[in-house]
Amino acid sequence: NDAGSLVARRAFSFARAAARSSRKTRTRGFADSSVRTDLTKGVCMNDESMVKSICMDADDIERAVTRMAHQILEANKGADNLALVGIVTRGDLLAKMLVHKIEEIEGVKVPLGKLDISFYRDDFLTYLSPEVHGTHIPFSLDGKTVVLIDDVLYTGRTIRAALDALMDLGRPASIQLAVLVDRGHRELPIRADYVGKNVPSSRDENVRLFLEEVDGTSAVEILDMKPGDRAHAAPLGGE
Image (cartoon, rainbow, N blue to C red; front, side, top):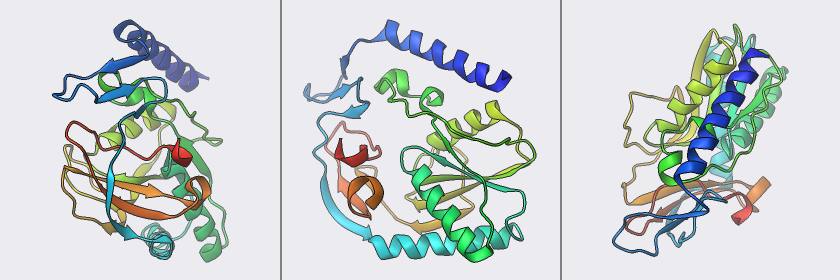
């Protein structure tokens, strides 16, 4: 269809630009030349962050998801016309948890999709060649009230990319944002409608969600970052 062709053309254009600008591995201009980015996997190779604290455990995450499900239903006066779309790699898992919780509460299974924003990021040519996970939205977005789900809200740039991707795929009636953690430090005028927990953090820290389904444990951890590192989601299953 037209939307799929548009996404495919955009992906091809970005991939061609990336191929011209870099090869397998790029060394950034940091004082420590060991800070490198593996463009094949899309994760920092020197990821030696130390855990400072665990701000949410499995029970905290479960309670937050339950509360957010109730808030989504209350704000939208039920589940009619709702659809949930999670941003990979953990927003999609949170979206699945919310769909199950909404079904328990309301008795309705709302449509569920997952969104890969790799080719919509404003930094992928600068930092990494994206690891593509694929978008799967098996329903029309047109006229839907879409709740976009992500794990940690930080600068707002991931959400900006997700909004661009969604609008290339359809024309929702409205888009709402739900995040498990809001850590602050916004760089764009983006605010979540539903928040599991506000976690004050420093720009020198990373805040990561781990989930039992892919990591073997469920927790939100605050980690120290080394100079030159970037905040990013944990690799799936500790890749």
